[in-house]
Image (cartoon, rainbow, N blue to C red; front, top):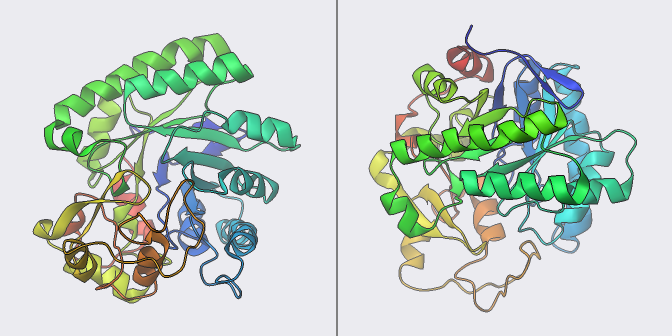
Length: 356
């Protein structure tokens, strides 16, 4: 096999495949637990994870914290001491720090942070003083960002990343590129960024005497894609969209069917209230937004700095509507290869297909 088992924190990842975090509610305990049970890394998205908890409309924050713990414990139960159970936490979230601490207290093996650079992530955990520290990882989209975060963690906290996720322009959901960059960047351009990240991390590996595994994300669909990432110097891959159309995915059947029905021509880059572009399926919601903003009737206090009177729509409502089955009026994030997903599968079969 080309793929080798990797040490992540104090755990061994037998199959170096990370299932990417997908919110709201797409990757919770059922999917993450099933992925971990195969010996890979199952990732729970904490974004409004408690959307279906009693009292969410009145106390989103407490329901989210409750759900973080619940789904980590449930995923670990499903995994049965195999693989890694981690979380994906958006830096842009209003309660980012509290989500980090709750995930660590609940026993997450790995915390991956994106939608902004997690410059203070080591400090949050150090300040809280947890006896069992989770592994930590940033999501970056360039060698420049990788160098920035590794240098900052080194200087401020005297530590480095346990792994890095390099997310390219073909990824789903929020993207670490401007619209202009998305129009111009080519596959070969991002290949060069991956090589740059490999070079960048090498000096920190030497300094700290540890391997910093690199996982490539965005557009990973086939075993050939995995091989290509490994040839560039990656140690593994992160895959998200392919896991949506699986029996184990936490999304509604209607959401999964939207993936199965999707064509390449249905994919659209949209503006998100998070302040980043996102890749999604064109539907009634997006058509409505082309006519003007959709007034926010209730604020769910999800994004730091979000002004409900100014944003084009409420992202919590849009994503929640979709995961619950309203695929015409909800927001359906997807990767660039969603049009190639045409049948239901299982976590086991997808991992077997991609494990090279």
